[in-house]
Image (cartoon, rainbow, N blue to C red):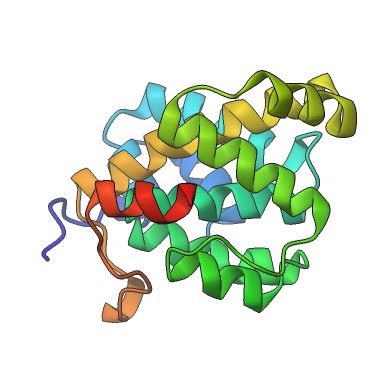
Length: 196
């Protein structure tokens, strides 16, 4: 799989876009690579996306471990290789267990989830694969997480659908030519396995 966009360099950016690139470089694990390489081709949208992602990743009301778990769920659903690669280490540092990540990576419902992880898994998988959340699950999420966190989690999940689409459409590879961390699976197979 060849990347579809040449890598943008900092030096090639117009002066008006360099402040955004500076902000990206402060938080990106792959410099101006990953989704930013594509987003920077539309600088105004890139600025808005960056500010939005800044909230969803660093200022959200959802704790970091659960937030990163939700991102990995979307990466697995979407076969988004770079997204998984970029967030697995962050999730581990945030306290998500290797056992949970390994099951998810293998497209299995994780068997050793903590209770709050189980709730986030069920919520995100239902929302992403069925585009709905059953009433009982919604009520449980509101009672255990609170309204703000449920809304933040919902928007995070949807935003990482967009990020996955951008990465997959532009065929972003792993920096340094690293191996893909996910087996590419048929969407129907993913759906069947994650909902079981």
